Image: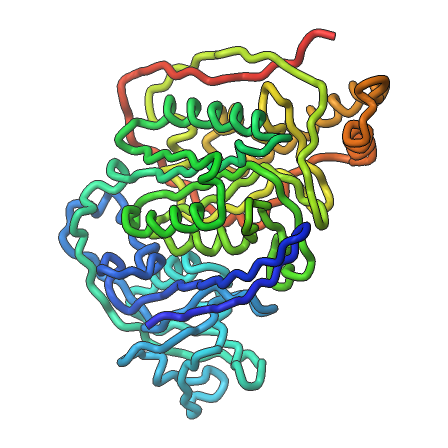
Length: 456
């Protein structure tokens, strides 16, 4: 009852050749969303709103097929298998009602009732509004590559609320902060940013609602990271949120860019490198209503290094008074959907300060502290990062390394910065919906680190 995508990735980075195999399993189920299953995305549609949290049963309607997000030129859901008894085994073509047809493995469902389907959440959202009435599917036939519209009546299923009685209060944010702290060139910067992110999140999210873990040093490896995401599949629940923040070296390889919004962006790790797409798709297999991946790396072709510069700032700790969920808690626990953002766009280097951290991360921390909307967070982080990059670039323009500092590496880094036009984030996926925040709490104060430019 699942689809398995096996992709061999032959990646040559520096002097090493790596063979990786990737498995992608996502499903649309014909059973209640809270049914026990190891297929993480089967339950993504069920985060029960507070107004029905006291009911014992919830009715919904499904079509009884399994699929995963299509990576072809046809945006939609690629059908992996058809369940026994699925109503899609007896569909009626809209333009010729006398023609009957069946949904087949390999077909792509692009629209339901005219609404475009780009993700599982899109599908669930439309199906939950059908109330059992016939729906019209736009389907790209795998044999002819032509699109036809088919009418089908969904099947009613009933799901028990089980342990989720008050989902807005029981949600947990599973946060994994990953950093290449052993790296000689940027390890110190990453350590600083990891600590800043940890402090910001631990001070803003109640302890019982935050599952935060840092993977650094030798744990920043392909096997450890992927195994950690696998372990989350056992602990995360359908109402939870999963957020991964990665800092390290990165690049893109066009050979693996086909069908990948990031164009083959990957994270350079010891021994085995990790494609961004691999990590993101693995993340989507974890049960949850919100999945987020943000990275602070380079995004240039081939070998990439995040370069160091002799520039600094100082830190101020400011306080905020809250009477409800903090902005960070709202970002992690009061949103549903998918987020995939890189700190740099194609052909841009990432930059770092040895004492204050990674450029993008420096501005990401105050952005998540000051905003409860992901679009504003990414926009503010990007604008502030680029403004800071431009100021540092201007500062360094007349400070070309000289004397003992005029090493080949320092001169190369200086030239890279002067040649780089800007530093702007790339958003590969931002399909997010925000909840209405209704929870109130006693007034409390949290601390937020803010970075300030030195006086010149």
